[in-house]
Image 1 (cartoon, rainbow, N blue to C red):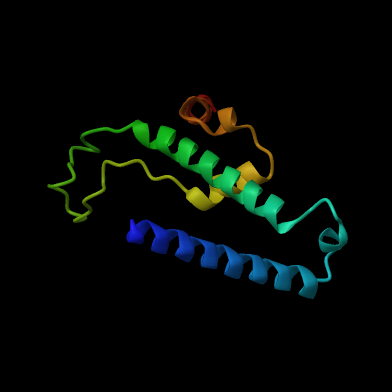
Image 2 (image 1 turned 30 degrees about the vertical axis):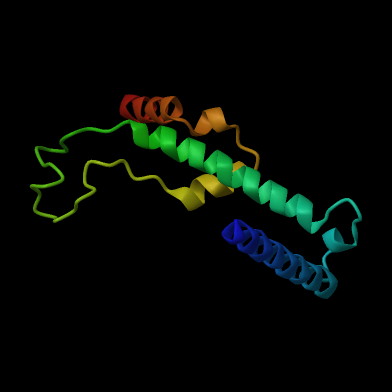
Length: 123
């Protein structure tokens, strides 16, 4: 019970610090967005959180397509000593920028990647 109270207090303190920081950034920045009453720190935080959730979903879908071997090598037996050799690499920063720019999530999925690969082979 006391532990829960401490956690709540700690979370509350963190929120207060975070809001103070965002207020400082808003007051110190000379952007036109900071003078706009419609754009607040809460909206930016919400947008960032939404982007992160979408990023997690897309990267999880892309990583689903796994193989047990790549060119005859496994995670345990490969000359590169790479324990993640068979895992698909997902470029998180690239996907995050695409989501922020407004690209549809369906265009970032596994099907879209396969279609792109097929088009490259055709060319």
